[in-house]
Length: 180
Ligand code: HEC
Image (cartoon, rainbow, N blue to C red; front, top):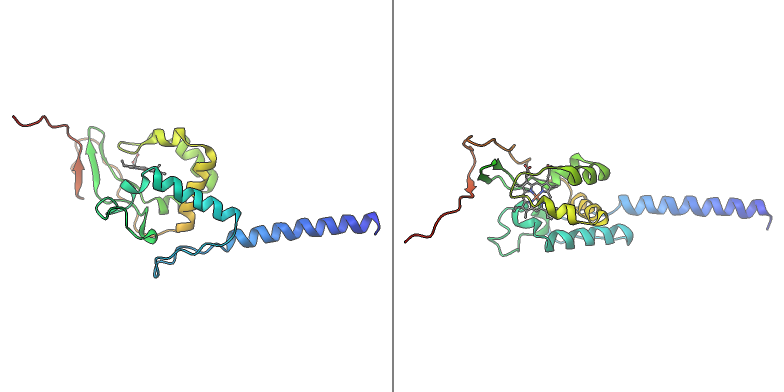
């Protein structure tokens, strides 16, 4: 084998691995809404999605971002998760809505997501500090999971300033003294 043949062979292998990576990343199936049974194939991208699912599940993100999650004892089908809550959280900050993260993922590139969550000043009760403690690889994994779920549901209403009455149902955060 001449050096030239080895060189050409090397380039062909690199090109083939890039093509394989592109095909595997773009061919990850989305959640099958009809069956509720997500099917995932591939290794690297799957590991990221799996990690994102794990982080979201243990960090309690579904508690606020998935309708009826607590009420259903965490049994909302995966295909219906992270679509945001149209029930507001009202307090001294006004009224906030736990956003539809599947729409957020659709709006942002991975790097935009990383920059945004690192700098955002979230309204309560979003635990922005969770993102500040999260490793960048986990922030990217959460993004991979949200992208894998795919866009679904409506955008959540915009937040309202203090004193403005919401037109949606809302939960009021008011400390109340025990009754005597
Ligand atoms: C206690 C309720 C609550 C929990 C738990 C929670 N969030 Fe949120 N989240 C919110 C609220 C409310 C907002 C809207 C904040 C605002 O308007 O500034 C929000 C906003 C966001 C946004 C901004 C989306 C956008 O498009 O602007 C992201 C991203 C996000 N949350 C991700 C997460 C992740 C990931 C977790 C789990 C680690 C999580 N949230 C846990 C309530 C919550």
